[in-house]
Length: 362
Image (cartoon, rainbow, N blue to C red; front, top):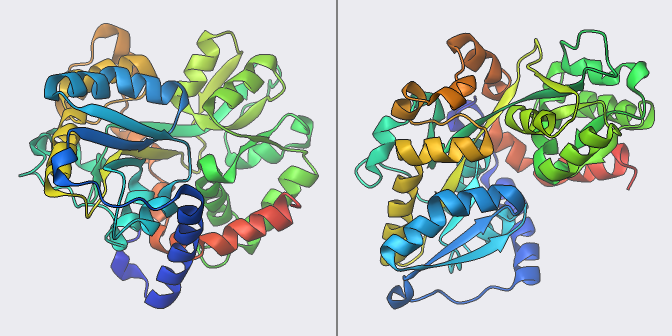
């Protein structure tokens, strides 16, 4: 993974791109005034919807709200990072689910709070691989390829197996706003590109859509349904979600490609410039998400491995399948360590425009 010092950026260009997206989001969502400190009995969360939100609420939010006599307020959806940027001076929300890349980008803009052990003591128990300046992982999410083993008999070993002409019309690729942007960057790197030079990835994905007739998969539930109906035979997907599709009847297996898989490290980042009491409440909640027992309870619902070292060492028998060897963890993180998250953010608007026009033909 590249550090901020690895590459020099024109700060004005970086901020201009970020803020242009943020202003558009603010115009759509409104820019309410700051909530006063006296109203810090609410925990205001930006979060994806669906089963992920239900599991997170059940394990963490509702028990925390009951314990502290506070009211959770939710805004659900994807792609709300521009809203956080637009509201930097007068934020409406306390926390937002981010990952290692988006939290790093938001931290560079001072729109989220740095996590410190003295404020969030359970961080000491989190494996170093899942600790970042602005977030420590609640879970990590092994990501590779879901393969229909009934329809596909040949071994699947590479990301480039998605381009096999035998799978034309049965290939899925994730929507850009979901996980597609990061998977695109992985394919671009493997095709000889880099963060600034994305022509190799664009050409490769154009072929996937135009020649191999790829279908866009929008979220985890949509993908699961397509795997169950066998409309999709092969696609990038999360390991735990592949297992859930299999348990529901889809004839699928999870493969970590030889070039390396990926993993998102998720948690709710703490939004900066909120009242002191709101930030303290958010830090207390963040600490709860790193508790070993609660992470095990969440792992039982979502099927993703915990990040707390005590939790990893003491997985109950029904969750032993979530244990990963050091070699597996090395393979899962192999591609992510090559990403330059800040450069991705700087060119985000340009890359998405090219994706829509050249790959999707929008």
